[in-house]
Image 1 (cartoon, rainbow, N blue to C red):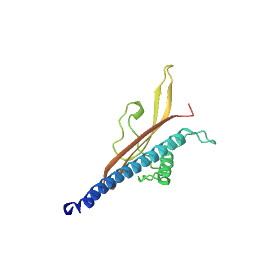
Image 2 (cartoon, helix red, strand yellow; image 1 turned 30 degrees about the vertical axis):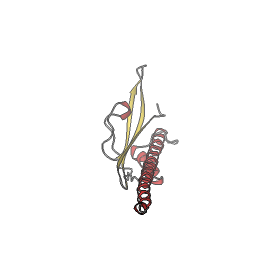
Image 3 (cartoon, rainbow, N blue to C red; image 1 turned 135 degrees about the vertical axis):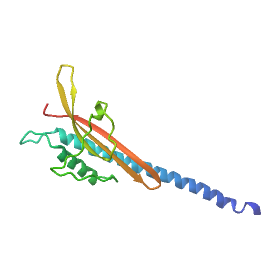
Image 4 (cartoon, rainbow, N blue to C red; image 1 turned 45 degrees about the vertical axis):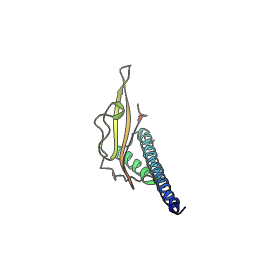
Length: 158
């Protein structure tokens, strides 16, 4: 009986430490998933904004204006990622070949707004806007998560 007095405390310490690690894993996964949802939402809103022409001029917004809209969505949400500031003269980067057309995923963290076109079977082309967001999220005690999303929408002026 005397040899088993500390066994309950040792077992409780082992079980509680495993439960604590499980809790941290669930918390980290939840934060990562929430950030991915926020990035995806910002990309969808940016692409939707990019393809809808302004009513008075019927012109599409500039990539800098689209990037401002995306950054405003990212900064207003739950995302732990920061966003560059784009003004009317500073355009966001573009990808050389659209990701949805077989291009590569951007390698650096930023917001990418690219005008792309796809050939149609009837010898016409359809223009669309692709928004790519790549962000790294660093969570406590968990390695860096590299999040990426691509959204493409057909331009309404076609």
